[in-house]
Length: 214
Image (cartoon, rainbow, N blue to C red; front, side, top):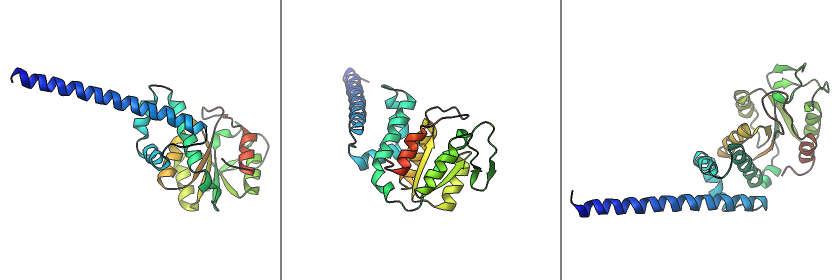
């Protein structure tokens, strides 16, 4: 290989490196701009943003980790889904509310049945209160112990709108899965997670169920 060939390969390598760096900077700029607009209740290129979030979230997460944390990414992405599906969710007629079983009291007397944990409204946790408000406002509520159970509920009940309460990780992956099935979704993150004795902002959740979900 002569010197001219070596020089050409080195030149192409430099050009490729520059293009990669520029692409990364462009994507980071788009992420920051998109996040800023999201906080202003605006979505940058909605359909394109939905397609990328639905199908390439692993790449987005890697890019986001350069400027934030994993939980922050899940938070921003969940906020995006909330805003994107807001109007479609309001039109849903067969809505379900999905609550995580970890909201229960440690001494919860409720038993696991075909439709999830069956609340007996003992008052030891906020689930009974939430269920009452939800059903008064047209939601069917399910307290589910895991994703497999949730999949069965969704398959059997076939809702046209899903409101879920979950931790950062579960919320994003659940919303992502439902979005790829074209099911309008709304979500509220837990204030405290950890899979046991978790907490949700009950008053905010009840307000969303009664008034505007998004």
